[in-house]
Length: 237
Image (cartoon, rainbow, N blue to C red; front, side, top):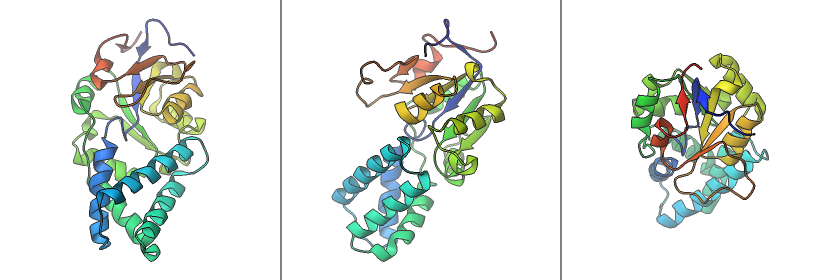
């Protein structure tokens, strides 16, 4: 799918983790706090294992093999077994979620970009995860004023890249697909999911390799500030 020329959009859907929030930093702090609450002897080795599990499970979710709830449960169960305390799986899961809600480290230039872009067009959060956690983090980061709405999979009943997720978001926002740009770090969950309902996608990839060969991308950026310049035209045609 090729973008319209010139690209003109009247609204933006933003993925949150690894697009607005620095999930690596947020999860690191939440992980060590949750371990302390469970009286586990955490270490860098333990966090490396957590990251490995997290990336593997979320990759399976984005491919449609797991739900978000299954990712959360399996991650906690695996870490509890790794520490030798399988009986504390639920306690770790609950504490990690509580701690994560308090972590709001941002991607570089996220605040600056959101503060300027929301003056041009409405912005909406569009995230897989738990609504209460994402709401708490946006409030913690003082970002709620920049968003006209927040769409999170646990309340929608569908997860990116399921077209039903994006259809719900479009219906609630009131914008047709061709007028909305989806910005996210995942080629599968964010970009392919947006394409499936006729939206353009903008791949945010500050730390990753170039896209696979033959991948069609209307837009790709390495710095969120690029949304304020370049080929983007904001507002009514």
